[in-house]
Length: 373
Image (cartoon, rainbow, N blue to C red; front, side, top):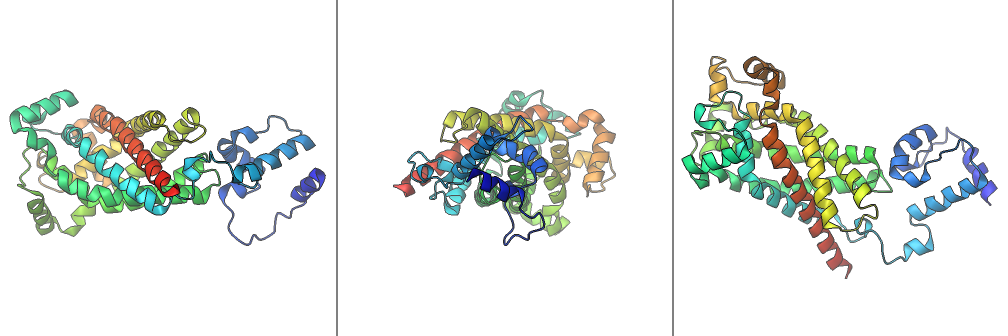
């Protein structure tokens, strides 16, 4: 039987037209499979160039188990909770919405300091040596409520944006791979597509938020901010930084998701609900992605805020594109300007992503378990 299966695999015509588009793990191109899918199924990696009949039988057995074909795996009560049938799109959306709102609300004061620290030409009253100094200075000089200006608009936008974000990621992660979370390429593609949807919803919110966060912001409330932007700059101002946001967030999310899933593979290979591993994996993923993409975040902040101190150096001419933003940053701050606020960004992202993943995985587990009962 084994010989027949081997012959069938070896004699399969490479030009046969499949009835459906194969999932990533099903392509039988060994060079590609060994480089990509060995990460997906490390136990299947072959160290020897000679394949024996026993190796082939082991391969077939493992393939059946991974795809749920063996009777023992079909009726095992200890299925991984990520693959439980009750983990529906609605579950991912509800868990994602809660995670997004909590992440942004809890970390909002640090985000406010980060926005100010990324200003290339801050006024003397808004120069901070570190995040803690920024927090205490703002509270002492401007009052504690200044730390949360614009929070409600972020909370309103983060819920639906993160619901779509996590639902899209989970759907594509499971569509592109039969072993969800263990295929780096599938994780990267799923994260990139989820980012396109998330940023389309959140970009206008970020524009309003960052203008409310800036020192000496002229707006009394969010409504006044929206009306002023529409009147003076038009609706396109809400998406002026969208291409920069995508240029930043796509690599950010690729690094973020791949690092998180790698952390889960190392710390939680059975993929069960384990709060500690979700926190650690999320924190490491957030820190790595934040540090690497800081230059792009500085550009995004400049495009969103149109800082009057920066515009004064340009004779009032608005900054309209990523190239212009990069050039302006270098002219005013040199190479170090690209990493303005990197400390605040990492300090913000580490707990933010740790909180987001831990809350998401908790509610995903909680809702899944309740529905399974």
